[in-house]
Length: 372
Ligand code: GDP
Ligand code: MN
Image (cartoon, rainbow, N blue to C red; front, side):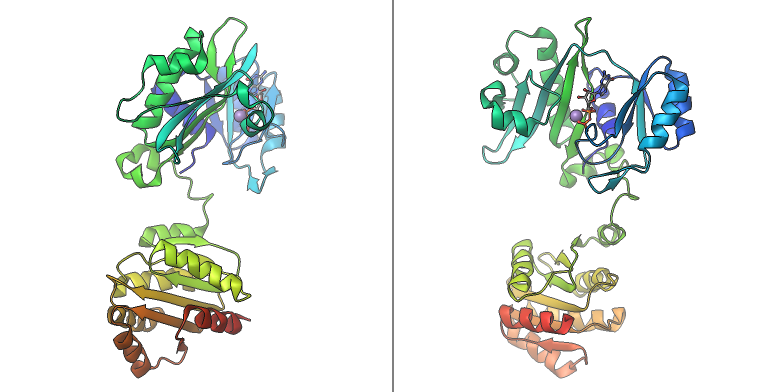
């Protein structure tokens, strides 16, 4: 789950990382009131789950309440890389002497958290990494040993004020089950104080149950309504923009099914993973989700029985067809444990809009044909 900047800053503050005082606003009037309360010049910042807001005109300085109202009106409704601005963060403006960069990410290759720091902050970090790689310090943290001050010194050198932040950011990262905590820019004020001027935080979805307060921050209005419905039903579902609905058991097979549909000349409407179970209830839930997508013209049901038994899946499909009342044609490829019995069950019931194909490629071709 990606957090908005203002949410990330709220987390940072809990761990003692200095941030500017600010307010959320959703209208120009609220932005004016926020500026009145804060006093002095403010920055009006678009809250969207994408970077590069500054360049896109989503971040503007305002010298007072009236100006903040004006700037807010300019920013609200902007489309920044496909994200429409509906929320603003108005914070007390900072004076900047230097812009630096500090982050903790999960280095999946090394299976360890990775600390990164550079004094060349403000710009996109990929640019620094590409043009001036030696300016980007990288230090891994052994998760079994945990953070040690020596690691921080290796990372930032002789910068005591930044050193303190490294430890706090690392604590934020681990205690919140984050996969990313990034401060860009980390500013040094003319008075020598450090402050996180931006916050980019991603929390591991699988750990959200341990952080109900953070989970509550999820902005359901920004999410695809179908994906929200799927989450409610406990179905792993990602909406794509084609017309062949896809249902597989297991993430690997489901992804392969997406690929095979493309190979067969079609366009997948979604990725949907039934998981290991394949119980009737699971099939009903998944089909219910897919059936809600008006773009779907056919459904490819690709099952490989391992622990999942083919006969059970077949019964699940029949129950689901009964309950969901699907209009679109369904092509089934069923293989593995008890596949023969599963196919026999389906052939006997012979629902009018269901076809069985012997191989994955045959099934994909048939589903693509039916969608066209
Ligand atoms: P991003 O473009 O989405 O990464 O948004 P940031 O929050 O990082 O802001 C982009 C840039 O706006 C920063 O690098 C700063 O140069 C500038 N900026 C943001 N807040 C302030 C502020 O309070 N004062 C000043 N002077 N500049 C700011
Ligand atoms: Mn930034």
